[in-house]
Image (cartoon, rainbow over all chains, first blue to last red; front, side, top):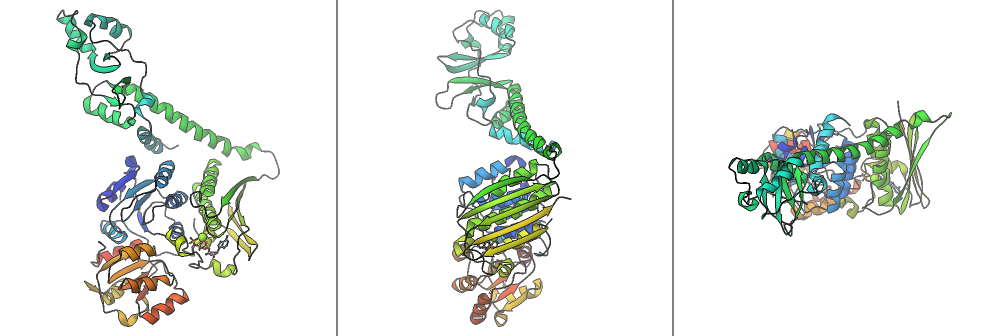
Length: 123
Length: 304
Length: 115
Ligand SMILES: Nc1ncnc2c1ncn2[C@@H]1O[C@H](COP(=O)(O)OP(=O)(O)OP(=O)(O)O)[C@@H](O)[C@H]1O
Ligand SMILES: [Mg+2]
């Protein structure tokens, strides 16, 4: 799924990375806790989260995640946007809640992980 | 830099660069009350195909070589410029991003647009497609070169050193409870490792481990130090603080165990997965802690 | 509307507590790991998807009269959470699957998440 498609499905706004919407995402990752995102460790994923602080972008940076979609539309911290620009991370924002966002993307073919083995070596 | 990366970089620059960064500032202009014949000199000798018409600093029209040729054919060389110029002129503002100019060139097929100031309509420059390309290339080259030079220098560092044993040490100070700065150390280290030419997936694992260690220092202590020692065969990450310490290290390592208070969870931390994450991302990890003394974490990643 | 019982069966969830309380109808889904968010935005009889295992989840479920909680990523419940949930007969289910995927499967069963 391209981010352009994800954007349409989620009725989302593009905050940064307008020119990179052809980027492919393969997996959906929905979480509000950052270590959970890091243990998930799938660089090709689209991260959906209800948090909007700069640490979300930091986390994406560390995990080489290229795109984040903030759910349940809210105002963004300027620092979050600046950091995303600096790190080349694409930010989307949808007014939909997390559950609905995941559901719609899933219905249109974006999959999640079927099983998470938290004791598996990361690499 | 890979080709596709370069391409998106250019697209990004068209948003980043402003028209005033790439436009030609020295503009040849003509006065509306002058005769058409005066254009001969300007258009021929300067080799330009059109020029803004300016009165008291303000843009009033645009006159092109086509207009000039038409007058020439009809023997109207004494007509005033203001009679023959185009009065409805498409312009661009100096503070608009370059991408707006790109779109406008596409839309109108013109060769140039006068650039004016948003507040007072004063002419400040002129922009052609050539200006855009030149401006982008210049900027791209600077950015590209800077990163490339860093990368080149750094990745050859081990080869240039003659010694039986070499260790590069990078140290970062982590400030406790400062959520604005949190992550900067890991970010700095990530960039450094990348420049050293270390494999991207190893860089990622090292970054994740460092970030988790950094966040623990930020969340649970008043500050500490992160040290990365890079050797030709391994990266060692050291995180130490003189914070409260961990009463039961085994328990702390258990997935889901966290003493983070509710407000920390609301910031997205406190899943109780950090230490496990560090263990999973590295090849060797040890955690020593004494209550009231502090915590010392050491993790090693092997570079094949 | 769909009964919690049916969800448990279809998605192969492991019921940890509240197994005698699975007859209720679920009004929709809410996925979040932030307590304040769930307190502010979840609705009565929602099924809540989270990876939080802290005892506060039970308090929030009672407060908001949620239909049940699904814990993802195979997370183990904390002792206190278990005790409280048993006492209040709150259905808590566990799955090894992460949030995105489990929500997708719930959505396929017809549970939506509009506010
Ligand atoms: N440097 C430290 N000083 C004191 N206590 C620590 C330190 N690092 C970890 N701990 C303790 O160990 C627990 C587990 O740490 P871990 O990093 O695994 O999870 P967390 O930080 O609570 O949550 P997460 O990392 O998932 O955001 C912490 O909750 C804390 O009690
Ligand atoms: Mg931690």
